[in-house]
Image (cartoon, rainbow, N blue to C red; front, top):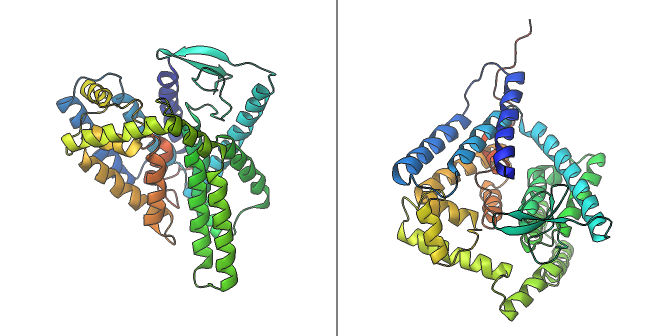
Amino acid sequence: MSFGRFFIPLFFLLSFLLHLRKYHRIRLFKGARYIFIGLSYMIIHYYLIYPNHVKNTFLPSVIMLFGAYLYLSCYSMPRFKRLYLNTVYVMAIVSIIIWGLVMLNVFTPALQSYEGSGVYMFLFHNFGPSAEISRRLSGIYWEPGAYQVILNMTFLFYIDNFVNKQIDRSDWKKFGGILLAVLLTISTVAYLFLALLVAYWSLIKLKGKFSLTRLLAVGIVSVVAVIGIYNSTAVQGKMQEREQGYESSSYTIRANDNLALLMMISEKPMMGWGRDSQEYVKVGEQLGSISFSNGILSMIACLGIPFFFIWLFFLYGGVKRLYPCRNAIVLTLFIIFQNSFEDFWWLPVTYSFFFLTQNCQLFTREKT
């Protein structure tokens, strides 16, 4: 049994049990529309138009959607952020410890077979499918780029707290541990996302307080950040791979994925090719795509432009609801930026912006 076949149903089951434990009557708030519209569209699209699929990806998508709703509707945004921070912090520390032990040759990951290729694994932690053990931190995820999404989303959830200086003293060590994990992923996207968040925070803090000293300080920090990112191991390594023409380099793979997906979208912009249908995978591979890594383009290529606008409309509405004092367009673009490098649009971490509210919208259990 693969990782997904076991943990996706487990996630749904635990979400359902949590929901039953906390509530017995549900007052459907606006989030219910996301389920019915999105799910109806996927069912019609998937079964009537593209019934032939390579992998059973429709059912996990439905389970994730319902599971996310059942779980997230049990918590308010402040409570969920606290749970998310604590969970990600523990995950980051554990992954750093295991990574350190492997790097020090205390333990050696085992090469395991996965979907026709080999992957180095140790205690459920991934150390890369390459010919040698990767020095980049992937945690329990399939690659460092996926892990950094989970890590960096912590900073996005707490952006209001950072702006308003409402971070508890005990939480700084947690953010420090998460930041260290982000740096160890050696992911260009991770570094760029952090830089964007810092730039956003700086612009908010400087709003209406412009002075020559502040502008000079921000300018110096920005230049140092750009130089640091450019000279980082992640960027330099990928530039060398590009110059040497490695076909398996991250840059080449993502470029081929994007070009193939754009061509697929141009051929079927409205209805797409189906969620991992046989036709979708076959045409994508013929056009040169390897991993379909761009989540946004993959969504459009699978389900069409109308579905993307449905998804975007509700995402923006959720961000605007959760961050009423911030620029919802900018924060929405941050989420789109992350999903442009990983296929996370259908996972609970993204659905959190759909279903969470500042105050829980359900009836609590009546006391007897």
